[in-house]
Image (cartoon, rainbow, N blue to C red; front, side, top):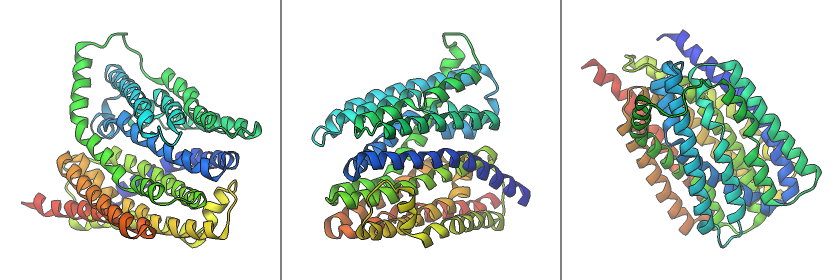
Length: 414
């Protein structure tokens, strides 16, 4: 594939990111309303349990999203295959919901967040991830846009309703977030192909194969929580001041927003990646450098603005000079993670396309262990360095993935 292929991948990635940006922009408006309504301490609690939701969302995903886009995208026009995968995703969502409700009763029994966390878990039953893969895999961009806009509009209306009623209840916020995806979910159901009620033998066999093949992807995704999310949990354990947690959480939410865009670019790479694609060392290096350059230029304005970005986006909080200083430090340090994620993206997509899953999982686990070790040391001896220590895994992961990717060039020539 030449330069035109790279431009096409970039174009689809930018297009998917633009779709995601519409929703994320509205989400930030709603988050502002929630921050203003809840206050600093409760807003930090909300960010924490929202991260819990992200973990169980990965369980609901169970690596099937990456597997579908890598190996089944061209076959989703078959109603039998699409319906089998849909029912599998519904079952995984229900399992993750039940698991999160049970775990919340133990993990948050002492901090009073068990009920809000359980309410938030209900959103897994109608999660956009249950159906979004169909639009991505079939490249049905028009319906994907409609799907995203319906979800965004519902989320915005829910946030405005809470703000207008001046409801400071964390439980009410969690309920709104849980039911916001329902209209978009119902819209997607009307677009999915229909088959008989009971799965045929061939469909059950397909479900079994997908589950087995998805285990490495699921392991890799769960290991991903040893990276950026681990920093949030470490901060909540080591820091006590509510204002500090709120400032960090605001900057952290911006980084997670940017990470959502990286996932859209990764989806684009996966859609276009071909198995056993022979590329020269220069082509591989060029793709890596191109994505690194895009990420660096894209994040530069945010780095220059520093604390003004979280302050403007989260104007609902009562900002102090100390909070602004901490938010500025947080966003400038954690932006490095976004650049590293882009740097390894072409390599990661091609490794997945080549089905070198064991190598990918091993690299992810190595980086995750390194990150947790670095965070444990920082938490014990220097809590103020938690953010920098939390980049250890990203640096190790990126270096190993890119080196492995470039090394395959020599192996292909043998």
